Image 1 (cartoon, helix red, strand yellow):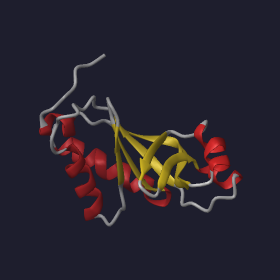
Image 2 (image 1 turned 135 degrees about the vertical axis):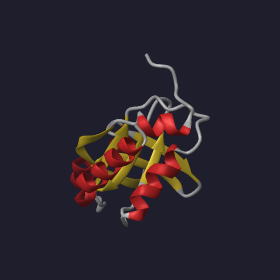
Image 3 (image 1 turned 45 degrees about the horizontal axis):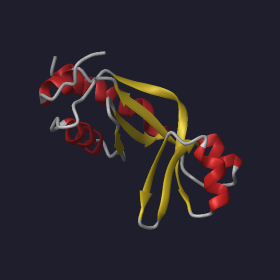
Image 4 (image 1 turned 30 degrees about the vertical axis):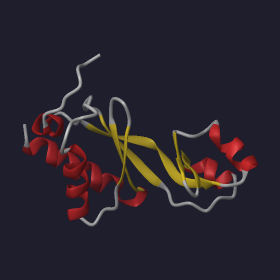
Length: 135
């Protein structure tokens, strides 16, 4: 496994963004029965004051009659250090400049940008352009 990268320019130059073929939805889980059904499918969860937030496959949200927008996930394959500074700002800034909403999720090894499904290809192209501008 690669060592975590903390240098801002190195993180951006090495981010190697890839588009997930699956669509995802952000949903709330207030009803315990629904939460139980969704937990096994969740890519990620976060407990907020108002209840549990889950990121689940879009088709699972639809199957559970939950109206939720589809999002595409772009994984930044650089092993970014948890204490690295600037990757999230660079990615979200580039997307914001194009008017593309972005929900960032940071995990232990990689960062993930969730963008509206209908703008996924455009977002991926922008991130690749950002990456190449620093190589």
